[in-house]
Length: 210
Image 1 (tube, rainbow, N blue to C red):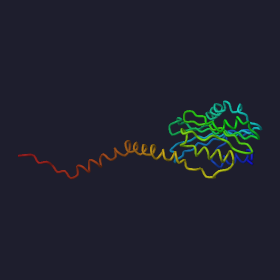
Image 2 (image 1 turned 120 degrees about the vertical axis):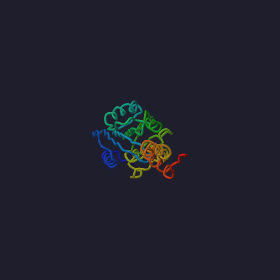
Image 3 (image 1 turned 135 degrees about the horizontal axis):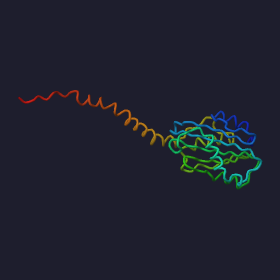
Image 4 (image 1 turned 180 degrees about the horizontal axis):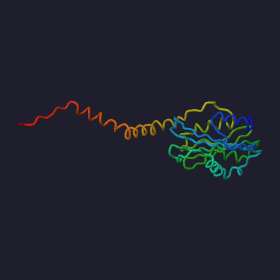
């Protein structure tokens, strides 16, 4: 059986580095803005916790847009989304019971936008239900799943995992590009005097005829 109270979930959010933007008896909104070196990306994660008696599919309609508007208000990052900056919306509904349609919706749905993903999560006493990440979001899914496990079902590993897919992409794309640009704009100009000295140091004056 899964504990349905919000208090331990609030404590877990704080442990994971979230700050509370809203704290009500039946609704909590928490925000974490963090640079992840394994993905070479800054992620703003907004978690909303809702406590309801019964969850229906109708309750979930339009909630992505609602949470996007909330995220616009509480996201402290000024970086444009999609350029090493992402916004993840995790919408956790803790309920005594849930309509089958609502459970299936959470099993099948991951909303998306520009540099954004929305994860609806249904938590009942029997199970915590959410959808696997589509291929377009695999780079950071390990981070989101960790939060959904720790805050939704209150289980899973305590330490945040490394995003292996994101790390692979960072090693193949971001870090080589970063090193290359650093050399072009910083390193290569500094090497010009060294190159001149190296290629010119052993040359002797050419004698003039006569």
